[in-house]
Length: 405
Image (tube, rainbow, N blue to C red; front, side, top):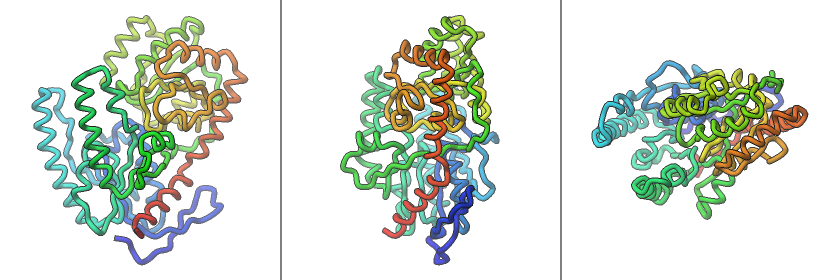
């Protein structure tokens, strides 16, 4: 519930000015804070910043926090509540049908536990960031709190990922209808990450606003851009399409055999990518580095960042590379990269799936150190638009507008 003690101050790191806001109790609902991914990193960064505003109470309610390794440091001012649902526990040992039954049982348990906790906390704002609670929150509506849905994936991501399967296409069509035509309209606000997504998929929606993710760190020691390394970052998942990046780097390595590709992240595609690397005889050129929560060091140690995704809600990884002064070569997938990269200025945009052009653009940066450094400086300048100070201010302004409505 919104408190009457209403003036507090967020002292920005620069110390240049103060921001006045009402004190609020804010709850983030998400799967985990220990899984590798931009969603988790961005959520923790925002929660930490909002918790630094005097008088705010910030909670993170998770369903699957089954690891002690945080994807990003969580402030001790953020109250972490683990509901212990663990949706994915043992799912590889069960059949598809049995998994569906187990998930249904766990969702019932999740809904009861989440509802009980929210009525106990009596928050001002509840934000859905995760996979499972997004369909539960509208049914828990309470006049004392507002509900916000953060949409970190583009609205047609299901269609893009399952376009080659008839069953997948039909299933995704139904899921998208239920999500967008039914549930999303029940939220007080829906937050998308890019103007391109809003203008393409939410024309006429009055409850949709654009709010970019913040960069998860600030970098003073920029990359020298002299290391003969291209980096990739993200879950080893089909949506990230690292197989295509490896194919592109196969062309690069033939022309520049002294350069390497390092991919940071883990996921279910790892065995397939390992096999691909072996088949292309790139074992000494392409390295799957696994999980890291020290993304800054990984990026500083590279000279080019490459993104090969089929779809991106925003691409925090591009912004993190920019913050380190590393230019990006990215597929122009819907909808994040186009909002971030000005082609030829702070990076290169490539038609999605065009592995030959991806390789050519990487080679252009390899062969032209002056261009690489010029783009790196422009990338660093662009990254300043996503520092947490300005993002936190935008969120608090949105929350104030919501609780007053």
